[in-house]
Image 1 (cartoon, rainbow, N blue to C red):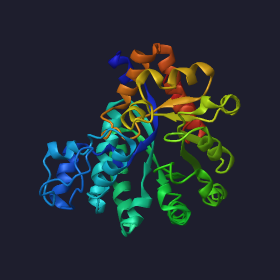
Image 2: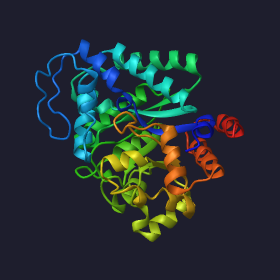
Image 3: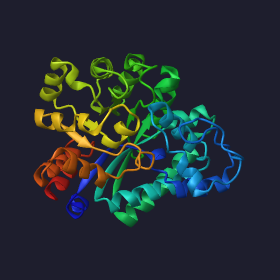
Length: 343
């Protein structure tokens, strides 16, 4: 892997979850404040012994040892249990941006699971103030800019999605750029959220949808037809349907691809089966992202390195992926042009 070239390559990250950026050290430090028990360990979903205490770094790291999508969701929930106050969110935001800057990432558009905060019965506004303090400090210190995407957990249903949308609209002038739906596609198809997304579009929010991660092409079509998605997260099953592939090539809907994520959740059975190379060669507008970098033990540089080592991407093609990340971003056109000139 040409690490130096990839690190120096200016790029954006468009599919990144704030909570998934929490490393084991930070999680251990958070557990010093919040002794919320972890109800599972590794992929066995068994109680940790005496887990109502400060976790060691090794115990925190063990939470990320899972082998399927359900295990990932449980690990994600375990992390959010330790995020309780504005200072926690300020800390993890600052550390996330610091890592992004070290990876050559000059801009990121980051999901935050507002739906999980509501599910826990917490007030979101104080937490958002912490996030914004962390973002402002980090932008000043490292130069990387950041937009927020408020994520409604699809498993919780459309009514909860409406609450997340209302909060996104309330903070729309505070670096909140769009909405998304993460969670488990297997229990909540995109059509459930048609009215939520229609309202978001009318309000001028941008529309991202996790689609085609754990289920097939029907979810991708639903995201496009019912939700009018402007970007698609994962989209592993596009080429199941030739007409869908042709449509995405024609319309140049950006795809937020996440190689390591798909392997760790077993949504993609093996590296060689990942569609990155096929999509790129077909003319789809693909971007590379980490999704939940600490939970998937990856970095943005590593994802570009996988494109190079496993799929034979040349330096010029890696530059094209970086250019795609700027073009697919929701930055103003003038800023996109400035960033593209860096390449």
